[in-house]
Image (cartoon, rainbow, N blue to C red):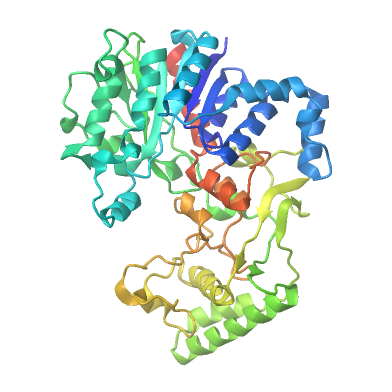
Length: 512
C-alpha cells in the first residue's frame, strides 16, 4: 500500500518530491498538488509526468531526449496518457478564491481519500510572516497586519486538514512566524491551537484532533495546553545539520492525529555538513555576461581592468593578503569560459556519488546540465563580484559594510550606502561552508549569491541554486530564468523532505 499525499501551496514541488521519491516511490504517491503561479505549475506538471513514466523505458527515452535537445518533441506527445494523468494531479489553483476552493473540494472528493491513508503537506505563502517582509510592511503607510490576507492563508491549509482529516500533516513556514503578531496576539500560538483542533477553529462540530510535534526536539503541543509554555524554537529545523548544503532555518510542524499511537521520539538524524563546493563544484565553470555589448574578449578585458585597479589600491593600502588572492585569481581569468544555457553539456569531470547528497541529486542518464546559465551584470558589478569572491577566499568570510568595500570602484551609487543598511549588499557563498538561505530574492539580483570562484565573476545559476536546494539534476524547471529562480528560492529542499517522509512512514508503520 502507498500512502496518498495531498500537496498544497506546492510551488515547484520540493516537499512533494521528497515524499514521492521515498523508498523508490513505493511508499507515497502524490494524488493532488495545488499551486497558483503558472510557471511553478508547469514545473510541477512536468515532474508529475516524470514520476509516472519512471517504469516505462520508451517514455523515459522521450523525456531524456527532450532534456538533451530543444529539437526533440515534447515528451507529452509521445506518452499522452501519462501527461493527462500528470495534469489531473498538478492543479493550478488559487487557494482562498471561492471558485478555486470549490474546484479543490471536487478534486478531493473525486480522489476518494481514506483519512487513515492520507498525508497532507504544504507551506502556506510566508511573505507576511518573514522578518524581511515585516520590515518592508512597517514602511507602508496604513499597513495593518490584520488586513493582510497572507497572514491567514494558513487557514486554507487548516480547512483541508479539517476536511480530509489526514493521518499526518506536515506544514512548513519561515521562522519569523514564531514572533509574528496580529492585533497584539502571537500568530503562532493561534496556529498551534487551530491545527490541534481544526473543527473547533473553523466552528465545525466534531472531527479529529492532532498533536503537533517537532521533527528535531522533544517539543509538542496538544489541544488545551498553553503554547506560551513551549520553547517554540524547538520547531525550527536547521537544514545544514541534516545533510543539506544550505543554512536554511525553517519552522516545520508535524501534526499526528490523536488516535495514532505516537508519543514522540522519532526525529531527523543529524548528518555531516555538505559545503557549497561539495554541492556545485563539479558543474561547468561559466563566465558571467556583460549587460551591454557582451563577448568573451570584452568580458575578459573588463574583468582584468577592474581587477588591476583593485589590486593596485589594495597594495597601496597594505592589504597584502587580499591583493595576493586577487592576483592569484587574475592569472586564471584568461581561460575560455562559456555562459551556459537551458541545456549545458556535461564537463569531462563528474562527481562520484560518495555521499547521500550526490546519490540523491545525480542522474547518470543525463547528458546535459539543465538550467545552468549565467546572468548578465553591469561592468561595475564585475569588479564587486571579483573582489567579494577573492575576499572570501582570503579571509574565509564575506566582506561586510562599506568599510570592507573601500577599494576604488566598489561603492555602489547609493546615497545611503554608508548608513549601515547595506551591510550584506554583496555576499559570497563560501566554498567550504553550507550556503546561506536560498530565497526568492535570488530572482531579483544575484548580489547575495556570488559564486566563490572569482575567475567566474558571477552569481549562482538556477541549477546551482537548485543543487543547494537538493533538487535532483533531472528536475527541469520551466518558465523564464527569473521565474525559475523564484521557484527554487521558495521551495523546500527535496532531500530534507525525503528525510521527513522517513519519519512520517516510521510513525505510521511503527518501523524504525
